[in-house]
Figure 1 (cartoon, rainbow, N blue to C red):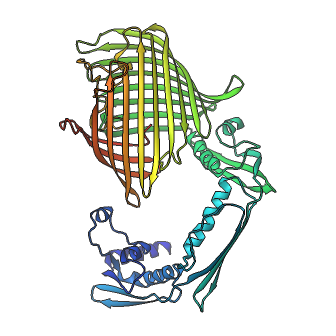
Figure 2: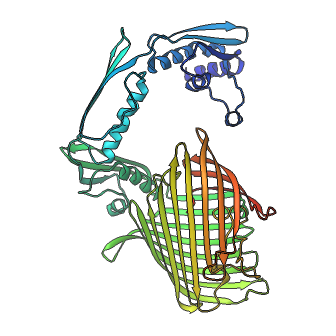
Length: 556
């Protein structure tokens, strides 16, 4: 039967008569709004170019579209709206008589918790807005840690006089705290791995943001195919959390890919991962592009007890051949690091051993072998509202590394930061990146700062900005970068952007004289896996330098 209905629907879609759809008498809502409510939205390019657009629909769908339109008007407060369908050859016309709307005559609020309502006296009553208000207030209460509240919003409707009386009673109660956390469904993984990777602790205030981020972090471990966190059980102000997990059945994952990046050209990649090798994750990665050929092997050990705490640990080995335009480098690296992460911050500590061979270098770069051991640490403090597509908040991150054995002796320090400011519908982003390299001897040229590319100055190619105060094509001891970007919604799922980048790369420790700029525009598409971005930048003082940058993800 289902197959038969599907075939009937396809036949209607493919062979049914198509008619243009119009509205007449719609005083409160534009035709564009009514099309949208009926699921008839124009392509994104039509919206951007502001072209006139009239949808075509199958004539057999007109009765159901009329019912949807009638329901929409009722939800918007027009309970007496009358809609008739009129046909004219290849056109269909909905004749709309709106009638008087429901009007809010009085609002009564009794609350010990600050709330905002989207209604005013003598305004039209909109039912979906009332429902959304209830959901938002409930969510705010849970985010603040209140789960035992009394919330009773009512909208009393007097149909004959087209009047609405709104009454809201709210008593927030006391702060709720987590009494216990139970983990269920584990088969091979130890319980501490789960408890170490959630942002929930017994005795902690209930926080909805912590629960949402705990979902994401547990999935990011890649051990589980299903995660459910239940916080509905409570006694007075105590919440009993149950975490239900389903471990992966397939422990082996193989990935192969072909792609293209503006920074590195055509790409080939292959990867293998064992998701549960005695709770460890073993990963093999092979990568090839015109600028880099790399093979790497890593072992991820979750919740390893060290210094009376549990740390995630990564053992890493790499062989790479890289082309930096002015020289080539062969690297053999072995390193180990520990990671610790909380809701707002994360840090890593590590130690490494490296051998680097420099060859095919230009005359001013020494061709030699470097062998050294180093220590490194990173720190991130993230106060943004989202990691995928932030609209407000800020972050700062820092990195420090230093050699303690071999050649060269160096200290390298970096700091990055970003500020997101909502401005009406737009978002203004300020970003900065500073770095300094201190070296008492000749350091490998790959340690010096290079700039340019999708996550740097967007008028230049990847790593094509060398020290601006040196005739040699070599990186700088100092880096100072800043960006200002304005993002504005072009449609429901598309943003436009205007940006200005300025970059200083110098051999001296601080030099704000030599710089390059980038001005440009871009398109952004937020998705579930990250933000897809396309930027076109040009140096206004040297127009021959321009670049198109395509990439996905956040910029740190």
